[in-house]
Amino acid sequence: MNKLTYIRSKTSTLLAIFSMIFIATSLYAEKLTASYLYNLSDFKGTINYSWPRLSADSGKNEIYVAYQSYVRIFNDNGMEIYRFEGTDFGSIYDLTVDNDGNIIILSYKGENYLITLCNFRGDPKSKIELKDIPTEYTDMHPNRLIYRDGFLYLADFASMKIMVTDTNGLFKNGYDISALLGFDKDKEEAEDAGLGGFSIDSKGNIAFTIPVIARAYLLFPDLKIISFGKRGSTQGKFGVTGGITADDKGFYYVADILRCVIIVFDKDFNFQTEFGYRGFKDKNLIAPTDLAIDGRGRIYVTQGRNRGISVFNINYRIDQNNEEVIPNKDNFISTTRNLQNQEINLKRN
Image (cartoon, rainbow, N blue to C red; front, side, top):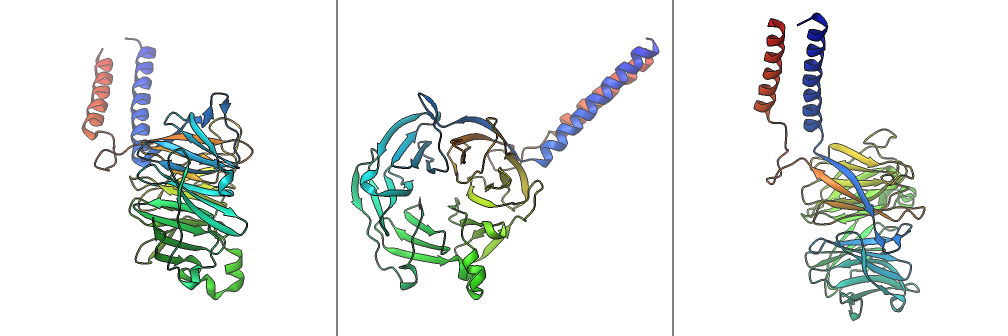
């Protein structure tokens, strides 16, 4: 074996070892990645929404979208399967879906808001009248609505108040976020603040963002609040926070409207990855705002500039027991030794 052949063989061996080390390091560092799938569409192609409202039915993996005067329903392949016009409701602000597949619509007629329970076709079944509302929550003008485990959560982004009722409209709880964070002691700070995103995680905790201070928060039932994320322009930092959501594995996703990315944190609020970025390719995002996750690990992102709703697949590197999947140490050592033995044999020849 001549010297040149030996050098080439040794170089190839070293490159293989370094490649394995790089792959192993990447797997240890990232618990998930995201890949672009498609945009929600009808048979004519992508539907060009700008910042619509959306809700995911995790049981059926269907997506419900409210935009202008229409509500559209999409199947788990991202294709529109049904739509209905909602002019009878007034101006539709938000919608959610209960465990029985009923659609609950939040709408306004003039300055008054209405909550209407509809069947899966959008036919009104009844109006949900709110009852026993404390005085401090009667001035709310909610613009977001979420159904979770038999309760309705109504959020007023401007006043930073959240009200919880049962499905019959009976008041159960209320949260004045501004007061809980101490903003009520500073009138100017309270006027500048406001919610940018709001969701309920799988444990019933309230996740929300405040764009003016570029922070994300988690509010627990015992009123304990944890904040996470920092302002900045580099990877993992917040520019202007928007929508927030969480999956059933404990990851939190925050839309950054300014940086045009979705930033992902683990259950301990450590930065994991981010995806999207400003641009006009399919995988890019323009001013992402609202987020929703279905039962198959797909995240739906609303955005501006008529870019519609982009769908990304979340690729988890954790197993069924919610433990991180890491490279098999024994296999890695065994493969490395085999490569080293091959090099020794080449040397001897």
